Length: 173
Image (cartoon, rainbow, N blue to C red; front, side, top):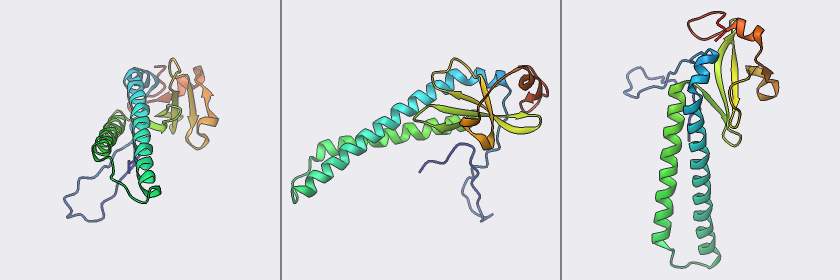
């Protein structure tokens, strides 16, 4: 199972040696989010490809298992199945690495099928999201957290004058 970027993992045992993921949300201004877009776009495209590879291989492995069951047993194609399992493991590693990198950047991957990504920001001192979707030339929308994608609004001068990242206020960047 993959943890969603920005999630908080609690450890109830203070004596445990487990390293915790206590990520604190990063707040971007528009310029910071825009600067991260080339890497974020590469990550999203890689995630989509890895997800497709994982699903294709998983489907093929399920087909092999179904054929064996329908035939009432047979000699499984061990070499081919082993190759498929290695491809599935590689896709899993790629997915995990890309999710971890997105978490390091501070963006939130909302929908891999559409390539939807949010960047937390502050607007009038309330957390909202700068919103970008694969295929868009830049970040031109924002939305309140509760409204999601359907609540996307164009970034205008009023938004620019009243949004900020972690260390600035009213920055038009």
